[in-house]
Length: 242
Image 1 (tube, rainbow, N blue to C red):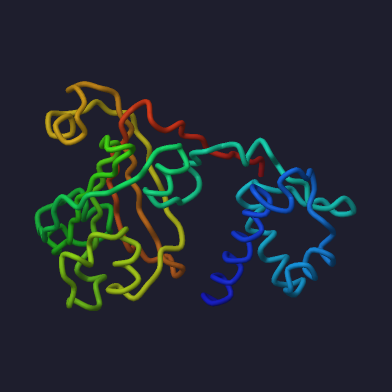
Image 2: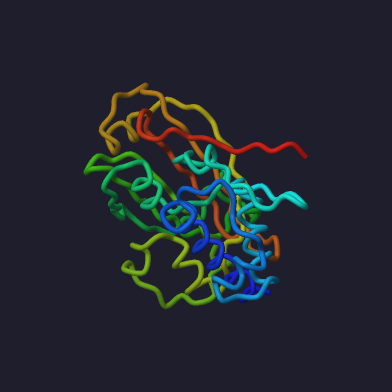
């Protein structure tokens, strides 16, 4: 199942790149499934799985007897709240040079808020990893990732293993993958700590994302608290009628 999912994601990403920058950059519709599968050297089943991902994300609309229409208005949305995009790619997509800095990593057993989001007992040891994300050398996102020690399978990690995006740590040391996120978005005002870290004024408007990540078995893997400065990202979400 996991191998098939990764394969479908790979094909959908390749096709999305062709829609954005390649063969179908100027097209309003994709070729017929038979022709498209043949040109990509894949089966129709593989193609349909990839098309389902693109349709789910709103990039195309498939209609029986008509085909797959490319939704250019959705493609033009740079910052999608409903899609999981790694921080550095998020910054690059917004038109900036991206970088990150690991601020600290510590183990705590008294973070009741994080324990609540992670669904563990209040005094469970939790690994907390703090980092800043930069856009053109300006700090624009502060993130704290929380992982319960109950979730970690391999404790032979070093501080260097925490510098890349947290997804790499989850896969290597928790032996699982993030499948989906449930995100709570709230407006907030910068406090003294965030104003100092993000080089903004106390009281400046910000957005706070409280994000809980699940694996394919619906188990909580990660809780992230993300703080975004104002004026950098134009956050959008796709809402489809069900």
